[in-house]
Image (cartoon, rainbow, N blue to C red):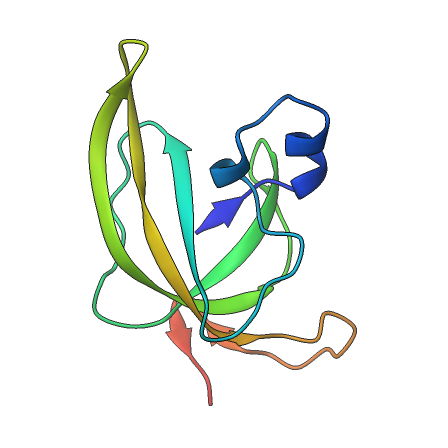
Length: 106
């Protein structure tokens, strides 16, 4: 799943749930919100990435499990919202590979 930088929430351009929390913590549960209808893998870990838009993505920041995802209309536009649990937060300065595609490497 790809979310925006928390700086976009601070500047007022995004909702908090559209952004990666300032401090990700393993074991904690966070809300998310994405524009458009999205389908997420619910039966295992997936990477959490930061997006700048236009498919510009960071390396995985954490491994998460999507706990729930629902489709809703906000101002007449389809959106996907839900909750995810952080399994592990990765050290961004350490160049270890954590995923092969969407498969977690342990």
